[in-house]
Length: 289
Ligand SMILES: C[S@@+](CC[C@H](N)C(=O)[O-])C[C@H]1O[C@@H](n2cnc3c(N)ncnc32)[C@H](O)[C@@H]1O
Image (cartoon, rainbow, N blue to C red):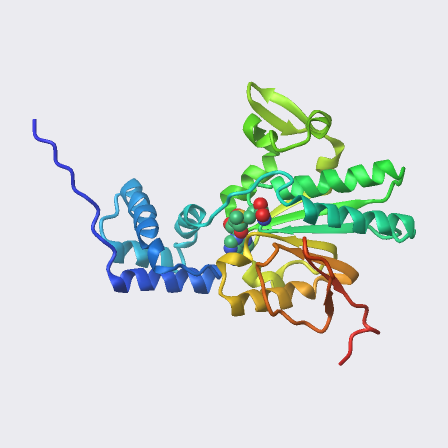
C-alpha cells in the first residue's frame, strides 16, 4: 500500500495580507508576520474539515455577505486567544471590590449595580466579578440588586460561558470556600455554577467594534482585560472612547495593566494607582469642555 501525504499549500504573501486585513477590519485583531504559520495551520485545518482545497475559494466563502457568517464565526473562534481563568488579576478585582464597598458605605446603591465583563471569553471573569459583588453585599448585609453582562466575539466561548460549567482544573484557581459555595459537581470532574446568582448573569455574543449598537445600558463597572492588547494602539483608544460612554457618572473602567498608554478622554480620570489601570467617569458637571 502506498501512503500519500499531501501537505497543505503555503499561504502566499498576498493571502496572508488579505486575511490580516479581514481580521483587522472585522474584529480589530492585528496579526504580526510571525503569526503567519498559526493562521495558515488554522485555516488549512478548517479547509480540510469541509473539503475545501483552495485558500482563495475559502477566503471568498468566508467573505460571502449572504452565506459566510457561520463559516466566519467558526474560523474566528479558532483564531482568537481565549485564555482566561477565575480571579485572574487579583489587584484589579480587589479594586472593584473596594469600589463597591465604598458605594455600600456611602449608601449609593439605590439603583441596580451593573457590571460589564468585556471580552469575557468562556466566562470565568464574569463569574469572578459576580461572586465578588455578591460576597461584598452579603458581608455588608445589603440586599441591593446587581447584574453582570459578559460579552465576547466568540460564539463558542459565549455558549460555554452560558452553561456555567467548568473543569476541576479551571476551578483550582478559585479559593476553596467560593468553589464549594457557588459550584456543584454535575458529573465527575465537571462543576456547574449553581447559585441563585446565575439569574443575575447574562452572556451575549458581541463585537466591541460595534459596541455602539448594543442595548443602551450604562454600567457602574466595565472590566476589560487582555483583549485590547491584540488591537493597534490607535484602535485601543477608539474602543476605550466608545465604551467610556457606557459608564455611569462615577463608574469605573478597569483595563489590563499597561495594555493602553497615552489614552486621554476628558470624561474620565485615571485612578492614581500603580497596581491597576482604572479610570473613573467624571460627572457631567466636572467634565471640562
Ligand atoms: C485573552 S481573552 C481574555 C479573557 C478575559 N478578559 C481575561 O482577561 O481573562 C481575549 C478575548 O477577547 C475576545 N475578543 C477579541 N476581539 C474581540 C472583539 N472585537 N469583540 C469582542 N471580543 C473580542 C476574544 O474572543 C477572547 O475571548
